[in-house]
Length: 126
Length: 154
Image (cartoon, rainbow over all chains, first blue to last red; front, side, top):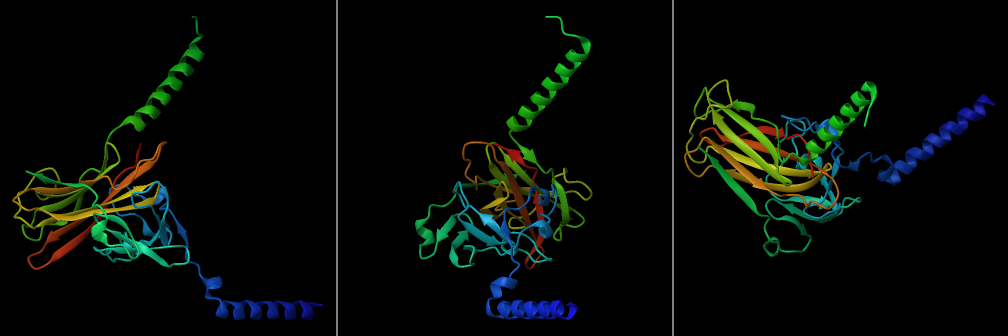
């Protein structure tokens, strides 16, 4: 009986291993979601350890339209986020557009020049 | 109306809690305060300080300041191009986008950038700003990390 159980466990483990090789998504542990409130540490860096791999992205819209990699929007492991446009992806990690600083979401194939810039103010202090 | 002392005390406490709750929603601005980010490499031993603010209404602001050694509140004028700042906006933890980097184009003690990066749909949402800071070191820009604002509800 014990031998039968061990045999079944070995078969199951082997099946999972094979399925994992065939479909990498089964071993994909990337997660998606908003930055949790406890990650916003006032006065210093966002605690990136508490942040999902892909952060919900809204641009200037009311709802979530995609996701951005957390390393593209915050310091992670001592690496500064990039300054330029960053990819916005769907749950399957297909690029659906870019977030362009000062402009917002630019869908794939669209010209950033056709997207109205976000109004910003520069402040000089004496 | 004659309210017993115990119930009157409870009523006072309840009214105070409700008043404070509404006050925190009605407050226009939430700031991190000025946080030390590093030494000014062009003008040692002066400091570079950063600040992240949520301003009325859902306005994301980031500031970079040059200040006397040991304090963030004694302005020190710096040459053009020395100070840089960028700001990111979040609504309920969802990333909205960024504005910047901007650099001081004249002799100043600080540079800031402000932009309403997130929409503000009806109902209440929590907004955060995260500011990013740079300083010129004589040959390139040194990044000094970020500052996170408190949340502000609108």
